[in-house]
Length: 126
Image: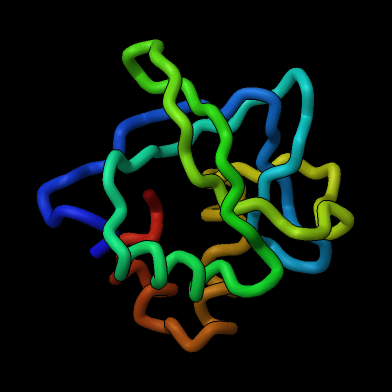
């Protein structure tokens, strides 16, 4: 768990950034882009174990950067956003979840040994 078992993420928008494909693969990263936005979720409280899990998941090629996001209530809050240490890995191709689900989800899950998830038995569509 990242924080409280009862806490759900709240919708948020990151202004001035764009979600794109990472070069040579099918997963997304964010990169600065002046007139773009990235929709996502913000969590009010991530515990120490959750922070460790996120850092391990993202790996050494990413760092947590404090950025301002706009919440669903219109207010702004500072949030840790994982960004690549080298923006040279970013492509110019916009990444969307719907496109990933249609074109990349099944092969990606099979490639990573998640055959049951590739058959639709795992909730990876959120």
